[in-house]
Amino acid sequence: MKQIVGVADMKVSKSQTESLITYALGSCIGLVIYDPVVKVGGILHYMLPESSIDKEKAAARPYMFADSGIPRLFKSAYKLGAAKQRMKVYVAGGAEILDQKGFFNIGKRNYMALKKMFFKNKMMIDKQNVGGNTNRTVRIEIATGDVYIKTSGSKEVKV
Image (tube, rainbow, N blue to C red; front, side, top):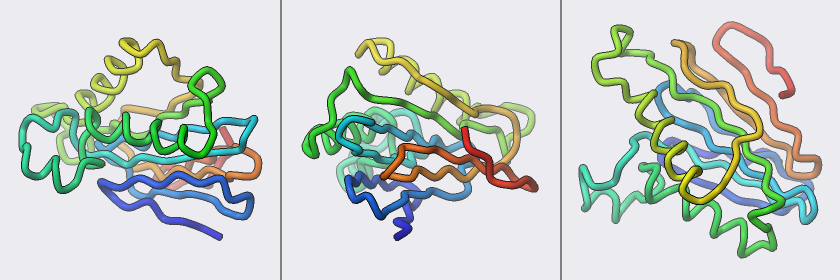
């Protein structure tokens, strides 16, 4: 069964029959985590790096922001038995779609916010497909932990 993770949303699962998918990652980041021992996986689709720009919106939609969404993703996985030291991490998105000249650099800022949090928490990224100027779709199969990426105009590939 396919669970869709919308924009500014997050889902975590340990159901062996599920796959999680998020579409149209432009400047947004799709953060995929997976613990292969307990077979717990999750995806966060966040839009902006810092919740401090709009505290009210951050309270209502914490998954919209890197700094409020990322900790919630990991904590939700831990509640299902995942462990930080076993976690596999895949990152997709962070492109400059509407901002080709790089004026706002939202994609780059989103990616840097994640990198900063990971460095502070001693987490490593296993694989990534970030930057450029194409939209991406990312999917994880909970039973296997296999992650698939699809960029605009190409076929889905396993990473």
